Length: 401
Picture (cartoon, rainbow, N blue to C red):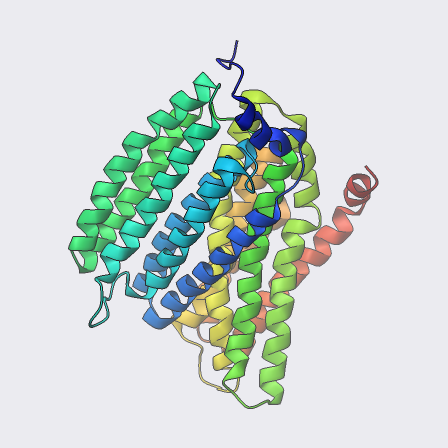
């Protein structure tokens, strides 16, 4: 017995697509567009603050946005996002996330006049979270285990909400600490209560497709960074070279995820069922994908900086030098977690790349911007070439399968 009972007819209609294993609806894709704006806002915040503190602030906000997106991915796997309670929940959340994105620049530095930015941000964020849990509870009618699991999630949300509101009322480092504790505390509590919980993944194909789409969102941010970095300068040889390297950088990141990892993990998740599928979804996707996503955003900040400084011969400096290397290192950590949890594999080439970048990091800050970007892109390209040759047979197997 799994604690389920027949759901009302209207709920069964909402669930039809998720249970059938179809892909994302167009309304979910529309919902994702708000996150395109939100991710751009976070990257701009990191660039504007221009330091370790700004990167930390950006990662906290990105973590909050990621948590809302993951929550609605669970909901979209339970019911159709374009019908009934699913459409109501996604529609309201779209408004809430857009407000969160608008207030990102004022999360730590409220602008003169108007509403108090940090309070608006927290209020909009909590609104999205409450909408999600209410909609999910309605969508879970007939599933006692799932409704119990959703009910358990209210307590961490309440505690986190109090901490976020306190943080909004405070300022400076205390706000950073309270925001970070709130986000990490909820992530830990949900993880501990979910490992043996009663969440459901009805459609493996829908689940994997949704996360692939978010990876595309942040990869798009890396391409936007190339365009933004180049737009403010007259065309020149160094600028065109830097732009080509920036696009090549993004292509390498795309290849590392979509060429082999994505089809292999799709097949693996589809083979799992019940609690095993849920646990992999939780650990490899909800948690394991965050460093993978965050790494691309941080690296994109560095790529944009390299375009700004492409014609300057002086050292790129710590911020724009460490963002590309640190971002790729964080991205690689996400890949290693993901590969290990889903495929039960240790990718020695990617571990070696992580070590190479670790060694390069303190040196690369002394390079001119163009040379620094070329160095990181070359390391990624070398990894891509190696994996393309080394995994040729495995790639063919998945593509023919």
